[in-house]
Image 1 (tube, rainbow, N blue to C red):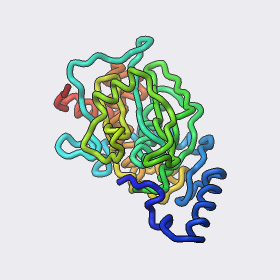
Image 2 (cartoon, one colour; image 1 turned 180 degrees about the vertical axis):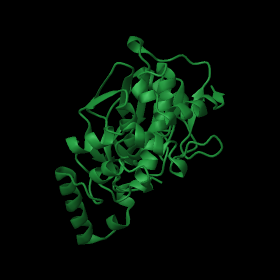
Image 3 (cartoon, helix red, strand yellow; image 1 turned 30 degrees about the vertical axis):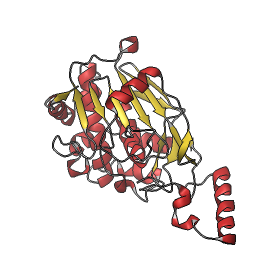
Image 4 (cartoon, rainbow, N blue to C red; image 1 turned 60 degrees about the vertical axis):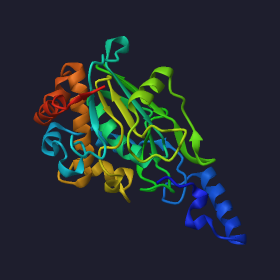
Length: 295
């Protein structure tokens, strides 16, 4: 459950202690910190980390497959469900399917899902401008290491990517400081398909984070695996674990990315073959096509 920073136990001291806490908080907000106690200032992703996150080969993809119990897509009881939309047409500006992401930098569930999004979308194109970020230090799964999509540029022959981070990880009032404003089309899509019986404290924001729409054919309205798997790990440690298909990190992130890849391949006509031909992806395509369509 989201809790404002001023309700945290360490902020409830009296007198001089409270003043010290406020001063320390101001310093942290201005300077930025990557640990569990402060609001992190985004910075460019090192080339070594980006290469490890985006360099997943077919062998690891096939060995991870669905990610086993680490990944939550399960038609009967998913923690983060992918739904198949009936009767919808592919959103295709410029003739390409469109992938829409809506989230917030404070959100630990968004933090976890971004790893899978980057891993999956790199199979169809390339990123630039990606930044390291951590989720809110005062939320559940505090300071989960992740990325921010605020300044990202994505290039692909096969699809377009429209990310929107609606809030920062800086507290403001009883929520977080607003960041990006979605277009009318993204807002309508989010309002229609982004609601879910999931964790959300803001009365003014009834939809769930993260939200991912894949060409208006498949939607995810939450995270596919628990952020607990990433707890205490740095960007470099998470990225390095992705090369080990037996690691819980690879099972969760690559397994989730495999589901995203399969959904995208359905919308691109299985192009490119480098992304869509692995056995695991073909198997997951059959699973997703077998989901009961909604909408």
